[in-house]
Image (cartoon, rainbow, N blue to C red; front, side, top):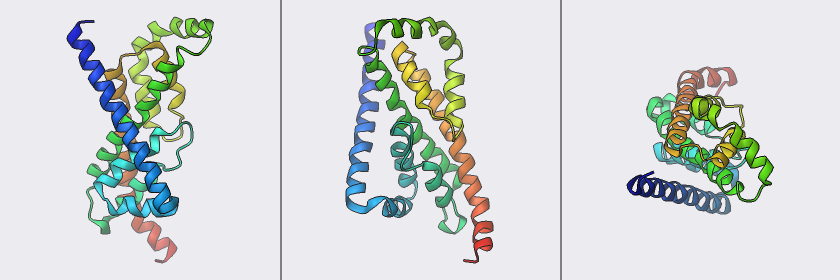
Length: 197
């Protein structure tokens, strides 16, 4: 790896870490200020930026999201609010892809604290993962029920290419959240009619 390429990777690392730390500080502040119920209302009021923040915060927690971006995107795409569902899904997907990427660093750091024989077993999978890793990341990212952390942590441990991983994550999250946005856009009217409000 050339010195210039190494510097670009380091810059990308710093940007992602800064985004995730900002999201966590913002989430902590929001929870302390408003409580979980009011956070959804606050994010709705922020429009497109609220969709981005919901994606970033919602996917940066391990295993279980306390603020799933699917809910915010679904409700925010309701036609009477006037937002474009494609843009809502796009900005939330970018936030979610970056938020999910934080787990890569958990794996990267975990490489130095887990037993050596486990690291060696993970490294044996590297040739297969190099070939299919981006597809695997995309599929997990595009599926709302799958725990993406199960993929990200081993990828970080084996040093999978970061840009490739981030691009696949964003693509999968955008696809999923655009689908949720359009479901909200076309489905909220039916839900309101069914619930009579």
